[in-house]
Image (cartoon, rainbow over all chains, first blue to last red; front, side, top):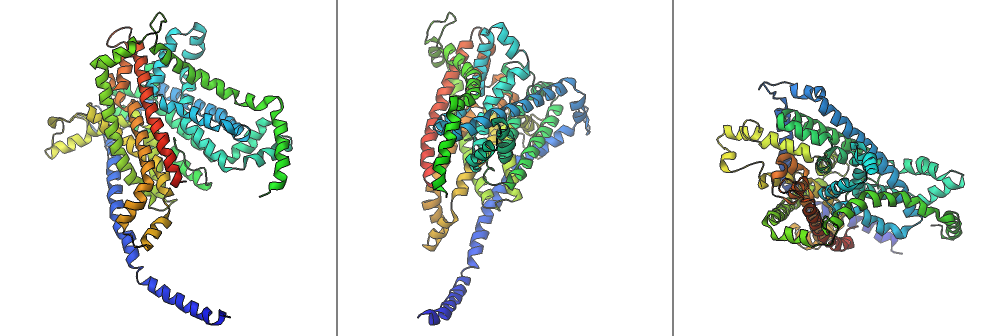
Length: 296
Length: 301
């Protein structure tokens, strides 16, 4: 009935409206791009100067040798300094082991709670946030107290070596973000269907976890692992109080005598962790829903 | 989607899983782990703070830390330092995050900023301190100090010192801003473009949109993140340790001092009491965060 007249009429009106809309649109982009551009450029420029400045200054500083000339002496000393190298290996060992424990402890727990005991979710959230409420220095003071009063078998088993002493504590420190990263990942997949399918085909819980769930939450797990590694390589407070020589502890000790070497290693370690996380951002980009890794 | 068949299927699973309480055994490793490696140190802190060396209950440790200026001056310093670094970090962090969010979603800028934020917020405590020494350290070293001296500005002659409370605070800003970017970005992404379009089509200017829509919606997330930043600065110690050592009058440093018996012997219980004090402060902050967060969730999903 009204198709005839309204059809072309509609088109005409639309074209007209389109033309009317065209008139303000040149204004809109200028407003949207023109003005915001200034506030964006200001803060982005300021951020580049503020954050890259010290990095560039450090790079320059690290190239000045102790005799005052420019050269790579500070960098070659990283390799030739035995204590520094040992502490680097200690820290890398701790980081690797911690990341492994974090994933193998957290993933099954999160999966199980999601699948069977959703009532415990709130409790789990509360518990995993605790390491934020308790500052590292306080955990360290508790550990120092424990170390003082512990029976000898506990000293032998736990406190005698940095690897056994620090790794379990760093796992706890990593909980706030590792739990959230893994939980976000697990939430994004159809867990029940995957587990049902795998179990009904006769797979054990172990192989369901490793061969079905793990590949599906790969990005979230990598996110948790990478941030855990970053945390382990950077943590210094607990290691200092408990008198273990890890990389950042050694960094401070070397820095007191020869700051150039410490600055050089600082630059390298910042770039290394940056690359780690930058790489992660590309992995995360492939799958949506598990990209954001946040503490809270 | 398939509601019908789901019900019997789920019942089938429940039967197979509850057999023998298998689920409880599954979370046992986690529970035991937490009890040992978080519960035990925490118990030592709280128990030790309230007992004497002979094991009797006492308030003495707390009356000491609240009566002697040696202990409450660091507390005051810590609170002031946390407040201003959190404020500066929150304002500039939000500004930076807004500039990044306004860009392309999967773009390079966003990747670089989020990776860089992760490095500075989670890793760079000690390396940051050394970068800071290389930049602003005393004259023979600091690149910027030397540069400024060449053009006639002597920072250290004007009372600036990298090993002072202000110097440490300035270094803290380097991880406070990135942490704010990490915390506030999801909230900024939750601001729907439709709201701005709606406001615009109703004739609101950009300023009015910001004042009546964006700011009220963002306020809870902003305040919540501000609280986290405050707590973060309060418990941070790595950067201060590397820059100044234990000499700086901040609460973590006086805990460190007390553990090592640098001031008096037999002070470990004082350290534990200071630890309990810190836990209580951070707990208050977290409760505030939790309350604010409930409001934030109403608008931003």
